[in-house]
Image 1 (cartoon, rainbow, N blue to C red):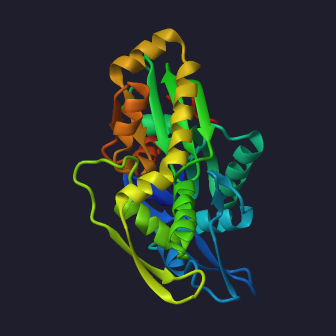
Image 2: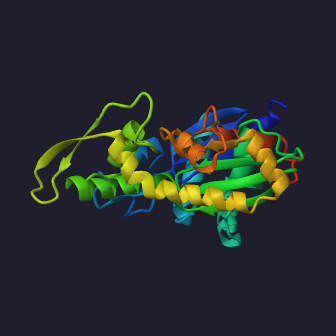
Image 3: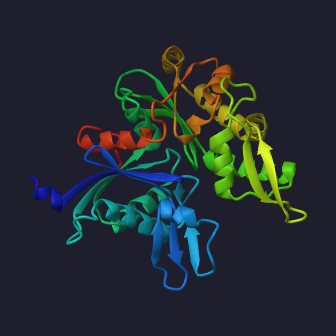
Length: 340
């Protein structure tokens, strides 16, 4: 079996707008930003993942950095294929003599259209996938958090990723009601960029806005253990001279309010569509919160105050979907909810 494992390889991929995670043999073997750098003249891949992210916003005309996914779906087919292929090569870097046949389980947003699903399947097959199975992100997130998705009871998952927020009620191995909205981590980053431009007359790039979100991002203007102000440096819009501005978590809570309100509305809309018996289960057990957005300070408390239902943040929200996809990979024959 040791020799045959070189010929056949099973991997689970969480193809996220912000990060791509690959699981092989129950271990996270790749955890890289979903970004590639491509030579404009030759069309060849120059860098991938973290290396490409460091180039983002700092390239010259001959190099272009591309984020192949937008709003949870593939926006650039060629770049997505190169990215998946390159990340799979990271696993097989020690055995480059031949490429093993791949069995892949990959997760997709629950609101994906047939065209978007086909794009993911085609990209995976072109990157070497012999057998490709797909699982909806909320289902993968629930599996990754240890929820018994096949039990006859309601479980609600809110997965706030980079491109989409996935909200789903799961029972008996299926999605009963769901909503997928394209308001998520990337929109919060753009809100911060907009706020800094209008409020402080300072231009900040995507990476700086992301740093602000990580360091002082908050959903509430009153939290326990508040973070220290974050110092932002950049050019003044009018004079182009350098300025330094301290940014507080209260400011960021104010600027993110509109996007978070839309997420709240989507959660309430999903609860409205939920059958009464499952609603009672959810009310008793609470709602599971995962994805990178779950790390936003005070978000669980804010959602709890809005819905009057407790929210449980996953132990490892960034990797819950990937771990769930890994569980699905080990149980391909058992789970009926996997799409071929």
